[in-house]
Image (tube, rainbow, N blue to C red; front, top):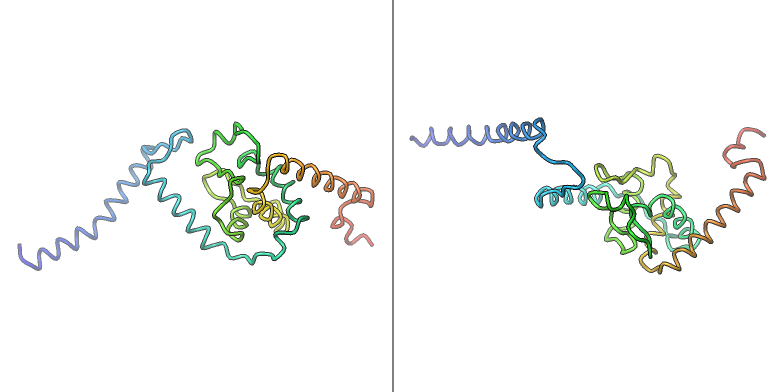
Length: 198
């Protein structure tokens, strides 16, 4: 085989390799070969790729400026109430046993009471936008940024809390929240509902 022929053969082989790989991938997809059942873990290579894609995507997209008042007690208390209502079923709380939902999730939701390696900006991005194919919803669809930052403020605090401290914080913050809602109802509804009626 001449040098030119060998070079042409290698070039054709390299050009054809992506097409072969795409064909194999299409076969795997259309034949339903890959098991997507939540009770069947990913293979290590697939798990590694998905984890890398998730981590790099979060880091690349988390660009929001972090509020300076994340350690403010009022913000943490507000976040505690939201966490109890929106997050604890999957991510658990201090002293909380695994729920049926948390057992059934795959990939398993991180236990945020144990802390997180994400920065506040990354936590905010995850809470706001969610993560595809994990069960993590996009809370930004239904909640404003201020409330989501309250949750992040609480996430920074939760690893320090005992079960009793967590319950006390949620109870006191819930009571304050209920009192605020009752006061707004007595004044005639939510503030934003009164605009334009003067």
